[in-house]
Length: 387
Image (tube, rainbow, N blue to C red; front, side, top):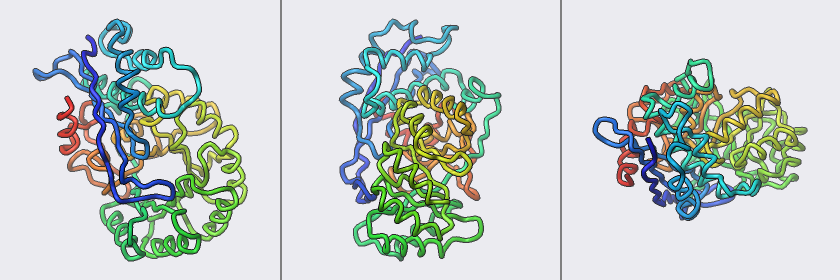
């Protein structure tokens, strides 16, 4: 058993949307295929992966450093102890050969993208859904396939007013979501409060609004927004300041009584640990959004979950960023609190397998081998074009 090839293609996911920090008109991602010599139904087993939106494709790093290291390794050094499957931890270690500690930047995205494809291949070789493989190997064998999801949107579009914002959010609620999220920080505080209030007015019983500043604010502005938004029953106030400004996060927590969320732009267990140590996050109400596809993959995410447990955090306080099926599988298999979803954006990479509907804020995952990409027709078509 061995990996016979790894392929990468950089794809555009451009859109006219913007948040408080960036626009997506030139955004790319890396799509990766890990081809094995294991045959199922007359075809090689292929694992697929891609990086989450918000970070550009990493084709250069993937092709120059990480693919050669894997393909140059002796095949048996990448297998589990029984020799029956690939070992994602050994593949990960091989990718990180000759990499210095620290500097958790774009390389974490490159490694995380390949790591996703490796786990997809491993679960397919085992002929299990990834969520069941994770429950078997790292849990008690019981996967919870009913996963909470929220609808992320509310971006700033050219010419988009309150009516268009309310129409967008209404469409998410009509599709079964109970929590919707919108952007703030790309307009004035007064304008953003007006936008927030317009959405709150359309919410029914059991429905909530989350807001996301995408790291735009300095401490003064973060606190100013926090005080103004304390009057609203928000699901959370997300990423107020720079993701590495733990002092800002801690100070905000002293004045903002509601739930806060952050972590999507922390790309290692060490950075996540610094947030827990120094960011003033409160395990009874706050949410952690680490995204395995951007932060060295599931191998590193398992280390992050172990660290959180040591610090008294439940995995149920984790709702990953990214809106992809990998995090859905992790949520089901390892007991996370849910997952982000982009109902109308970043297609075909986001979303659920065909036929999966949101019901009162939850989705039920089908029993598809691997991550389940084969169940999403537009996505698997793009993947099969690569391999």
